[in-house]
Image 1 (cartoon, helix red, strand yellow):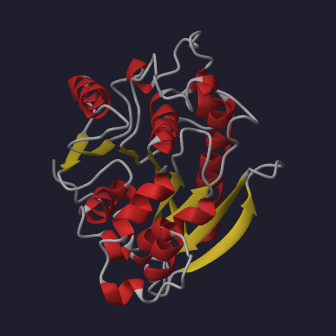
Image 2: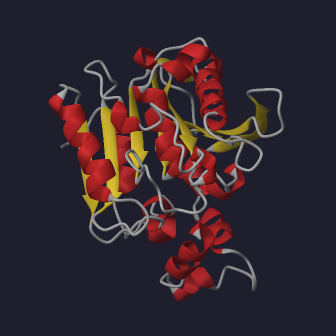
Image 3: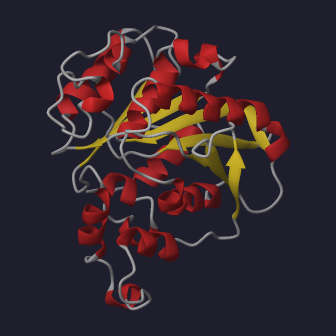
Amino acid sequence: MILTAFFRAARLMLPAALGLCIAGCSAVGTLNALTPSDGATVRKDVAYGALPAQQLDIYTPPGQAPAAGWPVVVFFYGGSWNSGSRADYQFVGKAMAARGVLTLIADYRLYPAVRYPEFLRDSARALAYGFEKAAALGGDPKRVFVMGHSAGGYNAAMLALDPRWLKDAGHSPAELAGWIGLAGPYDFFPTDNPDAQPVFFHPNYPPNAQPIEFTPSNAPRSFLGAPTEDRLVSVQRSTLQLSGKLQAAGVPVTLKLYRRASHTTLIGAFASPLRWVAPVLDDVVDFVDGRATH
């Protein structure tokens, strides 16, 4: 589904850009290939746990790290907790690193191998790796963020708002400098998504399993981005409702809605050929650097 949407979006690219892609290459492969690294480097297949899926790739900005270190973002992709691979999101890692953000793109176990909450345990371990290795990687341990798109936005939200998961990994949401959710499902039970239903034991949904249930006043500052219209995740029920509840609790929230973006092109807009769709890369980097506007 995500790859199909990327392919449709890729058809809007400049003919010269499309000419660079050999016949049969995927749209995601095109986005990865056409997003320059601008001197950023990648270290692949880094284990954050003992299982094959518990690996991440590290995208390091070019040049020497600043005295305090680069800001760090740990990113989780979407795919209804059924599909996805960190290799598909090289364009996110390259784009962020080129802007001076040390970026970790993490895999996590997917259905049917696991159901809720095991992918949250994996995500917490990946974020713990980011906390613990930040300084050694040239990052700033005081400026670690968690970010996710779609199902990955759910993962990021749960780590930032519900302390159970990071506590099990030896950490706390208080260590986060902020969190970033892009088109995430934050209030979606009962779901009509057939891929997500077995992940959450439909119709017997587990209690305390939605981010909307956790809006503490001490939550990390928050960036919530979404398309104005989303056919997969309700913007009103998820992004706008969570933003309102966090703000009511006194949490600083940066809310961005993007008119031209769809559920999938919102993350695709990190890639060079699709940045005209939405300035989401600029907005996220501004948030990480403390320049965000509401």
